Image 1 (tube, rainbow, N blue to C red):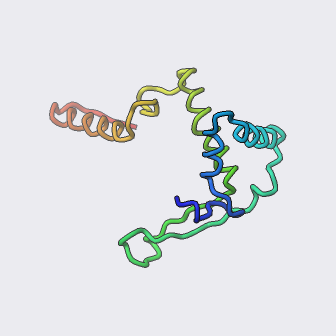
Image 2: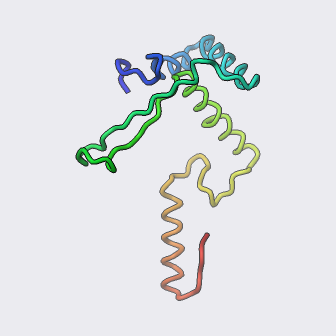
Image 3: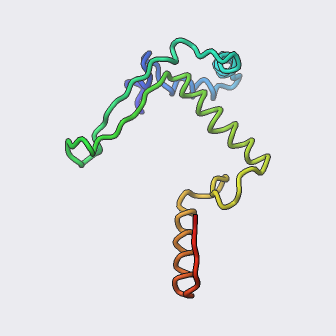
Length: 137
């Protein structure tokens, strides 16, 4: 997303937080994460995390039909960054270290999301051709 377009109600851009995370000394990144961690540990969200903007976007080439619109939710950029850090990276690494993700979930690093669909199709094809009864949940 270009930096001219704001991605939060305050007008800040998530790219600012990503750039701060890539700094060599990492000072701005640590400060941002510490502020968010304190707010999360105290169970009191920051006041700027409250407002949210719902935006409806047209799907390209689909026309201006109501059922062809998609809704995106814009939250504060630092909240978006911290949620991505906590839920995306830290939780994913923790699950990998604890081996709490089963191989059948296809949620480990190095596996593609299409692997699950391909595995299911192959499962059905093999059982259809061998005429064996099969079921999946």
